[in-house]
Amino acid sequence: MFMPVMMSPSPSPTTLVDGTVGEGSMNSSIRRAKCVFLDPPAHKEIYEKVKELVDSANRACFKFDITDMAEKLQYTEYHDADQGFYDWHIDVTPTKSRRKLSIVVQLSDPSEYDGGELQIRTGLLEPVTIGKTKGLAVVFPTYLPHRVTPVTRGVRRSLVAWIDGPPFR
Image 1 (cartoon, rainbow, N blue to C red):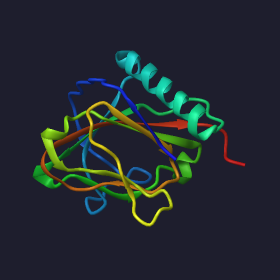
Image 2: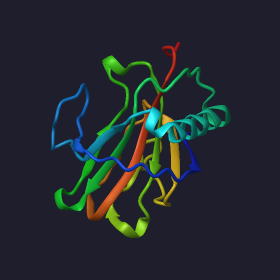
Image 3: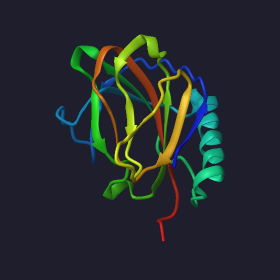
Image 4: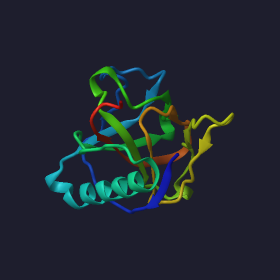
């Protein structure tokens, strides 16, 4: 249901803000993270690589009717100082209903932090815990519940994107 692929982008954002949930509200009981959306022209190569990875995963695993990356790439940091996490959620909302695939790229080396596991519910009894290899990318349908467990040491860095398409039929 998901496909890990390797990638090693290295964005260097300057201004991080508190991450939001749902339709843009702040709720520290659901999410504690710092984020910045990356400008496409300044990060063109990363955008192209992400799109290439998603297209490949989609052809191999999902065969969804997808069109584009309608939103900017999100660079996210989860810090141990505030036990950064993101509780169970899906990436489809009433105003983001065209989202079909999510991609999460691991940017931190696993030795740089503890906790911060990306877990995805795939219908199995237990959620699938994704590996922490630096550069690992996982592509999955936006309707699958997923979370990032609290970071207890260090900083977890990731890159997230959503790929849109026509409504499911």
